[in-house]
Image (cartoon, rainbow, N blue to C red; front, side):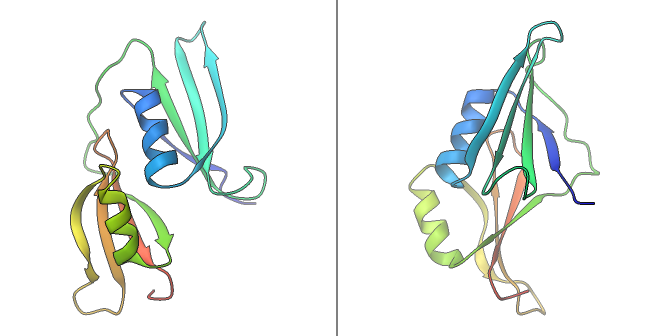
Length: 129
């Protein structure tokens, strides 16, 4: 068994695809519209969907806003050099909500950013966890 994907609902599919591909460097693996159900799906990730866990973006055509609730926390992504990566994505318009640095009481080096829908993404420097 393996985890296939994690799904998040988005307000604007093209804007979200642009963020995940251009800011976070993911690949758009597949995209499909479902006219009868009035929704579109896009699957993004860093490797083949048959081998790695990916993110599913769901866009419901008749919905423009969602409440995130208080149960969902964040998506975590490992990066090689968190300080360099954060500088690069700042130039691409990323919203950094916690600058890179060590977590209190830990050797873990992390930062937090938000996607266009307000979902939190934790960036963790490779080798610090």
